[in-house]
Length: 565
Ligand code: ADP
Image (cartoon, rainbow, N blue to C red; front, side):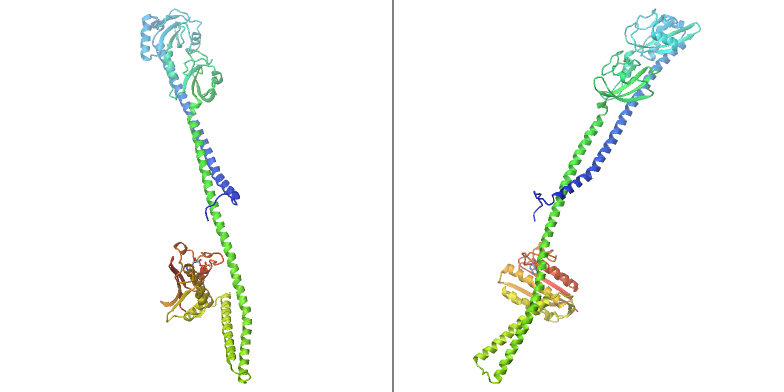
């Protein structure tokens, strides 16, 4: 039979294509949906996670910075409330107080006291600033107005970027101002220090977009941040967004205003860096997609080929069965026709027989009346006549047998004596066996009980078994050395008929198939494969059992076991 091969004139091409398409499309749709939905949820949750992490960092950082500034403010407030203007105005006084202050926090660089007119009356610190007038200084004007002020970074008289915290103390003898400078480096380090990956950074801008702390990726104190225009906008709470820098890199930003909305704390990270996990997820999804797709397509091809191969095999089998059915029906027709022939031949035979009797009678009468004398010739004539009678009777017998065999009628079960019935059936094949040089033995036991069976059906079974046996024997021995033994015996109140031969036998592989309809090993025209399946059915209907035992190359024995009547 061979395997199924896709050829140019492949009759299954269209079907194969349909199976392939449906086998690919059906799993691919849910697969793609699952991958897309999974990817969507995965990336959204990753994005949310990244953004909320940024938000948390800004929030915490903002709190730390605000806390630091408030602490420093409280330190100054404590001094202003604990000491009088005169206490501070003394040189040793301010030195001592500043030293105490430094012990609390080393963020303080210097400490100065100013009178109402803005004159720097006392100073402790590394610069020579005492005696200078700050009347026109921005911070001084502000602090006189608002009682307290934290400046932006500015250069001032010392020409070094710094920022100050100042407090105004209203006394009975007029107001005075206390001011401290904060260590820029220390503050810078505090702001800069955020725990984020490589490209993460934090810095502060004032409301004009000038750096109040340095930016790691470029941006010196008091320089203008060229990108700040895009995000230096008033807002409440924390704002997160993605924006491109002037250099073309996209950044994920989180910003919040602090110091009474004067400073903008910015935490930012390169977008590619922040969403690195997203990119990996993307690659993973693409890979899963490719692998899944390849697996589905490969599976579809494999299954489609398998299905088509099976279909091709089934079709082939069907074609073979169709062919056999045609042969079988032709044989059935032939059977019917031969019944017709037999019937037709029977009539002339009867006429010949009648004519023969007439001739015989006339001859006898002639001889009785001595009109014909007995001679050698008349004796020969009488011999010929009796030979005609024998042969006509034989022909009539054969036609009767054909008619009996071919007649398709409802089974009429009746009491049957197997002991006399079996030899009758054997007689039908004796001649054929003789021609093939087969010795036919009968072994009919005594005390065989009657059975209930339709005689013509049992005859059909036996004839079929005998014909199969004759075929198997000639297959192996040709026309010399074949043996056939038919046995009848009673066994436990039942009747057992066996047909044994020393023919070619049945292979182990075929043993399970011989009772299947249309199974045959004979060439086309010699066998239909229907015989045994029909016999099996007939015996089963009679309440009997049909069994087979065979050794390949040695012979076969079929046994029929029937219930007694
Ligand atoms: P058919 O005779 O038309 O082939 P059957 O159903 O009578 O159909 O037999 C089926 C097959 O069983 C045969 O083709 C043959 O291979 C095997 N078979 C039947 N009887 C014998 C036997 N006595 N010896 C060997 N093979 C047999």
